[in-house]
Length: 180
Image 1 (tube, rainbow, N blue to C red):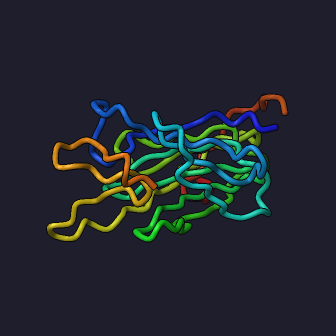
Image 2 (cartoon, helix red, strand yellow):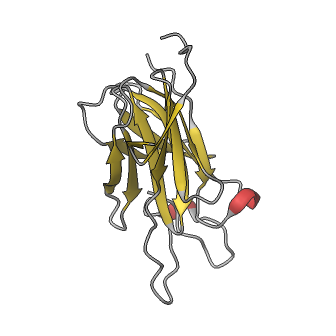
């Protein structure tokens, strides 16, 4: 059983809080090292992200858009933090990974500017990690989430096109996996 909380973001990049559609990332119910991403309100699973089986269960995660690229930051039971991004062909690629923690990652948060994320662990370390920037969109390219319905001319989606105890010492700060 996994206690990891969920993360969510707008279904389409740049749609902000006006959108009624969101993507929700949760640990997979059968493979605790995998992550499922669901679309709401349709309740359909859009992706099952498997980034390795040697890291233990997913402990913390964050889902966001880096420009037009769907980005997933995850913290694992073995202390590994990683970032994966969704490619244009629907494949997930690890863009960053570091293991600054010797114990499970307990929390993870992306900065408001989306240029880094922080992880904390039962080992009393707070680590700062970079968030890879996605390449700029091509001219005249309108990004569409690979597995979400394409918008109709009216702007609405066309459903026919779907597819341990706390440490007693103060935390230490590490940046990019290097202790300061």
